[in-house]
Figure 1 (cartoon, rainbow, N blue to C red):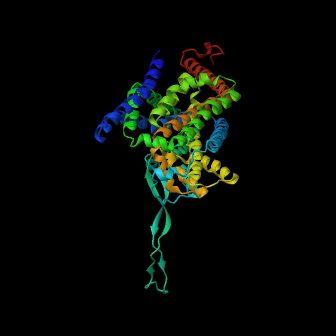
Figure 2 (figure 1 turned 120 degrees about the vertical axis):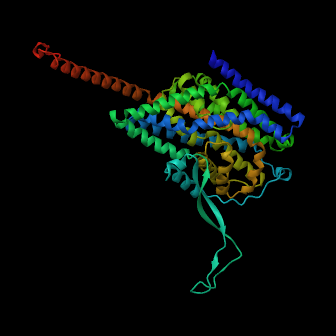
Figure 3 (figure 1 turned 90 degrees about the vertical axis):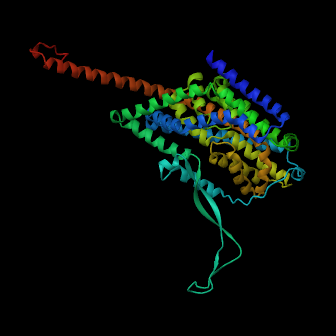
Amino acid sequence: MGENMLLVLTIGGVLFGCFFGFLGRLANFSDGTIMLVSFPGEILMRLLKMFILPLIISSLIAGMAQLDARSSGRMGMRALVYYLTTTILAAIVGIIMVLLIHPGNPLIKTHVESKPDDTKVSTLDAILDIIRNMFPDNLVQACFQQVSTTYKKVKPLVITSSNHSDDKPVDEYILKPQLVYKDGTNVMGMIVFCLAFGLLAGQMGEKGKLMVQFFVVLNDIIMKLVGVVMWYSPFGIMCLIAGKIMGIANLASTAQQLGMYMVTVIVGLMIHAIITLPTIYFVITRKNPAVFFRGMLQAWVTALGTASSAATLPITFQCLEENNKIDQRVTRFVVAVGATVNMDGTALYEAVAAIFIAQMNGIHLGLGDVITVSLTATLASIGAASIPSAALITMLLVLTALGLPTSDVSLLFAVDWLLDRIRTSINVLGDGYGAGIVYHMSKDELDKMDAERIIEINESKHAQEVVMDENFCKQRPNPSSCSETQL
């Protein structure tokens, strides 16, 4: 009853947030008033983000410690195949929808102003940054910063003599790459470290048992805290959505100019959520995907309100483990990694947006360009951090690969507040279905591990009882009176 009540309240929070947001637009509130309306929602986001780092660390280490290297390897391979398959399918769905609907119109640029953007991006730099962040040089720094490649304008020198005394800088600038640290948790690096730490801790046997138990208890405590915060989430989500809607400028004109683009993205996301993901789940597990979605509904609505798959992570864990009865060893691995690398909604969004910008500029894309869009959208979605509006940043990769103007990304800012929420909810849904599929494929192995562990525990208890009996007999005045079984 409590779970159903919380779900109803959360859905009500979304609906009332939309209602009060549009109602508040009529009153034309000041920026200060809108900030106060959004303040309870800001507190919710802070609470959820506060749990991200300790939850990832404790859940991954506790989960990996209970798996052997072979089982975790198989589970990881299954999850990776699922991630790549669904992400590529999402990009393909987006490409089909944008080619069929053709929302791009050159007249849009005459009504909606684009801002110049000289940001240089490179696919190679993005790949190298992902690998760099997987291996942080400072774990403490990785908790709040991640490395990124940026380009700095410098004036090259013209060498006029051998002693360099007459060297002069030229008027033109060149872009020189440099590594900088930007704010934001390096989730990828923390995941890699925790996976290795957990596997090795589990292989240490009795010596590592105390350490493993510490992280298990830590994870349980955090999940209990999450359960308390969830009762505040309906009110926080309502305030988040209301404040966002009230703060949008020129809502009617924006919807009129970019309406077909929004419809294309939303229809594509709905097809992926209602057809693609449930079909894959049903074909592999032979179970009803509607029942599984019902268990994920709380996490889906929360993602819709917060627009952050990382902030929704604690609630996703709770929905999968308590409602859908997925083994903790699976959720702690698949969902924690999936929240960083499995971005189906983001891949679909970036594919649609790239072709939309091409259509808007009157550029025809051939088959090779379409294939490039699907591959780069998949890559860019993997590189997208699980934070709000990260897709707009990684969108530059896709546009650069196609040679399209990156300045047109600014056209999409006006509607990203809505599309970001919808695609994030699809990302969370994809992680959930992935956990269900991997659990179904790994269930026999996990049951076998549980049986072997029970046998080991029983043998250990029996050995301890034998030792205790021997010690007891040796302390008796007449040890020869002990039976042979006791000795």
